[in-house]
Image 1 (cartoon, rainbow, N blue to C red):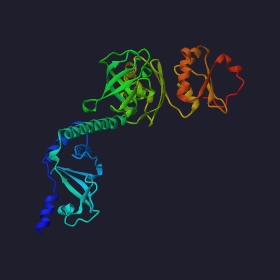
Image 2 (image 1 turned 90 degrees about the vertical axis):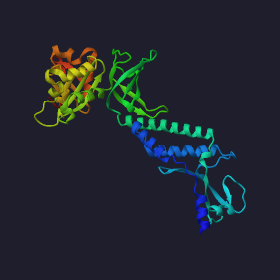
Image 3 (image 1 turned 45 degrees about the vertical axis):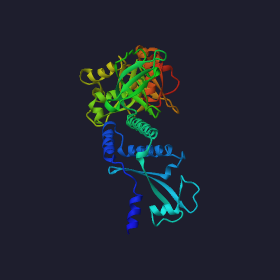
Image 4 (image 1 turned 30 degrees about the vertical axis):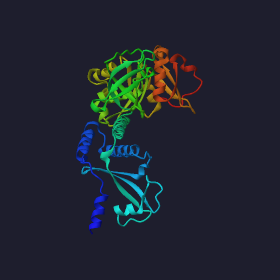
Amino acid sequence: MARNTRAKKQAEAPKVDIGAEIFASLRELEKLKGIPVDYMVERLKQALTNAYRKDREDRRDVPADNVVVDLSEKGLSMHIVKTAVEELEDTALEIHIDAARRINPNAQVGDAISIPVDIQKFGRIAAQTAKQVVIQGIREAERGVAYESYSSKAQELLTGTVLRIDPATGDMFVRIGQGNDVSDAVLRSSEQIPGEEHKEGDLIRVYVLEVHKANRGPLIHVSRTHPNLVRRLFELETPEIAEGLVEIRNIAREAGSRSKMAVRAAQEGIDPVGACVGPRGGRVGAVVEELGGEKIDIVVWSEDPCQYVRAALSPAEVVSVSLIPGQKACRVVVPDEQLSLAIGKEGQNARLAARLTGYKIDIKPASQAQSLEEEPEQEG
């Protein structure tokens, strides 16, 4: 019995009583930076394993699976696992059966024997290596946490501060987030509203296009030209949209110039256009101001394509809309004096209406309506 007790005591690895201190630090790290305790415990174990493997006196590269680290709030200990053999050939990975039985009296040839390691004898280089691995682990975890945080914010509206503008490319770098959730985003020149000027320190609202993993943290691409920027701004300004009473069906946009937005009421008794315009035009005015004066036409969406096209060509008046058989296209007749308004400057109004409805639109003045060869299939 005495022999078994002695063998058991010999098998116990020297403990370093730093477990409670380590875990207290890791909990504080989790609280401040959102890095899970379990993740950092694994990184610490890996660091100590690597430190032991590099600091061995025999300079042998012991497989990581042969090094066992026990880290808990009770303390820190380590074992090296060797195989019990009758003829010793590799001292780094093998232990003679006689020596094995001094650790475990019941050891047999071929058994894996856990041999205690005195981790207090680690050299300065090994300790520094462990420290660097832990620091790297913290950085990787922070990047992972940041990526998870911002990947969930793709297609959302965020407010950021302009950090700098690349004079060569015009790309803008924006600091978004607050506190520990801060990251940098790229607003490429192609995603900036034409004619819009910003300077360092300006607050700016951006739409998150996509988030990618990168070596230095999440790579966040944002936009000021995407149609969904208009959508998110109206969701912010219009309670009826946030509550699901009004639905935005589609948006067609030429950033910096003009947008068309189709809306519908989710229940009777609600004016979807009026809700988006707001009292005295305050809601749409706030969006227009945020977009630097971009004009916004808000129209009522309809299941009837003829009615939808008629509304989409607003503010022009429409005499009739007829579908062209076999095509997703229609012919529109407008009063002669409304032709230029229906087409718009450089064709913009007609172009946006076609993009909004998904229909190719052929606009004709009323004076030419009698000369049309095809009879209308459906009129609205």
